[in-house]
Length: 108
Length: 125
Image 1: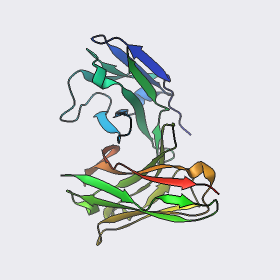
Image 2: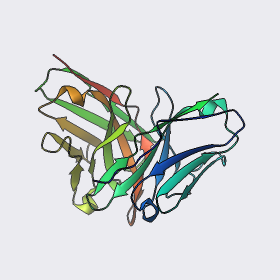
Image 3: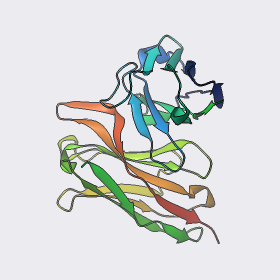
């Protein structure tokens, strides 16, 4: 089955840029989606199809995808961005949804 | 307002059964694929399974960890999604989230655009 690998944690100071990676075999050929989950809350979609932002998501959130790594970039990080972030793809071979293990973003 | 509300969680003994429900509002339920996703305490998101819509023959898919024990069904006439869980194990303890898959005919996408807040299932003796 397809596996997505994320770093367990990323730390960044306020105002700086956070980059959260998601690795997978030939992930560049897949559409990658990102969710933000704050403590005690349901996940929220922040980027879909590698680079697209749903309405209401700040422009500070952006995504990219290359051959082996997809990246969620959060510019000008704020204290309120602190959350767990999950990448997700659909594995066509198994017809299953696959989530990465999640990355905890800490704002120092 | 688009919303998903889960119910039916609780404490159940290993080997027992439980049926979860999800009630949508604010959108045409029958047009969408629907997922169940779970989150064990302190852990990440785990996809449980999917129920496609009538136009896609109500096909269901399941994660390997629950296949043969869990069954997803939907009743479009009652605007409801269900998760029947049998032969429960302690490792099934989690918050179970109902989720709407983005897109409707003819464009079905592969990401989730609406999430419920979840219902808690605890499997313990």
